[in-house]
Structures are given as C-alpha cells and as structure tokens.
Length: 202
Ligand SMILES: Cc1cc2nc3c(=O)[nH]c(=O)nc-3n(C[C@H](O)[C@H](O)[C@H](O)COP(=O)(O)O)c2cc1C
Image (cartoon, rainbow, N blue to C red; front, side, top):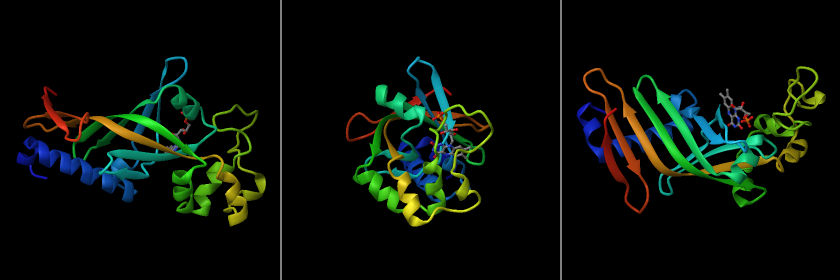
C-alpha cells in the first residue's frame, strides 16, 4: 500500500480487510494475535492476547476460541461490549476495533469450528480444573496421561462441551498509521449497510 493510498478511505478499508484476512491465515502476521479486552463483573478492564481464528468481511465479524469455563465467558454474558487491539510495526498500523460479542457453545457454529480443530489444540479444553482457577502447585491442569502427547479422537471429544467460539461483530474501527512524514487516523463506523468514515487528528 503506497502512502497516497493512506488518504483514500476506500483503499484503507480494503487494506484493513486484507490484513485481517492475512492475520487469520498467517501465524507470523502480527494481526494473528491481537489483544482482546472486556469489562469484568467488578467493572474492571480485562485484556489478554488471543488467536484470531476467523474474519468474515461480509458480516464484519472477528472470531476467537476459548474455554466456556473461563472468567471472560461469564463476564461477556453480563456485558458483551468488547474491544480488539492490533499492532503491526512493519505496517506501522494500530487498530482498535470495538465489537459486540456473542458466545457459541454446543451449537452448530461451535460444532463446525470444533470439526476443524486439531487433536493437539483440543487438549486445551480437557483441563480438569477450570481455567483461571487457583491451584496449590504449578501445573497446566491437563490430565497426567496426556503429558507430552495428544489425546485420541474419543478422548478429545470430551473437550467439546468447553469449546466456545466467541463471535465479535465490528461496530467501529479506529485506524492509526504512524509515519514520520505525517501520521493519519481514521475512524470507520458501521451503523448501517455502508461504513461511515471520519478523519481524526492522530
Ligand atoms: C500467543 C497467545 C495466544 C493465546 N490465545 C488464546 C485464545 O485464542 N483463547 C484464549 O482463551 N486464550 C488465549 N491465550 C491465553 C490468554 O491470553 C489468557 O491468558 C487466558 O485466556 C486467560 O484469560 P482470562 O483469565 O481473561 O479468561 C493466548 C495467550 C497467548 C500468549
């Protein structure tokens, strides 16, 4: 993307969509692991790195996977306002994306994504204790017989009840391009069919 196209709202939006798509597919792309933020039940901010699993440009939805027992799931049930932060130093782009989250557990969407999950990844959903629960010694919570190996298909299926697809509908993108010759910042709001663009002082 040339510098002049950093002044064309349509091209910027197309570039955002391209980079989010690459972020899903390319493990080395910095957009593969954004920070996902929400508010907990005490009104405190919670942020953590997640893996971007899906971007649907037609619906403007970003997905990641988590364990249904994790505290963020309970918090998102009570308050589904959420935010992603992306940064890529080579692209010189930060994006803060406001979203509304929906939880998918033991439904068709979860089933479809679970079907595409590798056995090794399914292991994360087999912890005996709940994720984020306290433990009296250092451990990963995975049953001992699975240490250094992946579960077989039958055992991996026990993780399905915990597997959750968090779908996040994009409401607003705050795009920031930091360039010594002139920073640029654009807000894109998705209220209607067509995105609305607003230039902002960076
Ligand atoms: C590179 C990386 C990728 C991660 N991906 C995920 C993920 O996709 N889903 C997830 O729930 N946690 C993921 N985590 C762990 C979270 O950052 C976090 O520690 C965990 O989910 C507990 O968060 P919570 O206490 O807010 O629920 C990842 C961590 C790292 C460092």
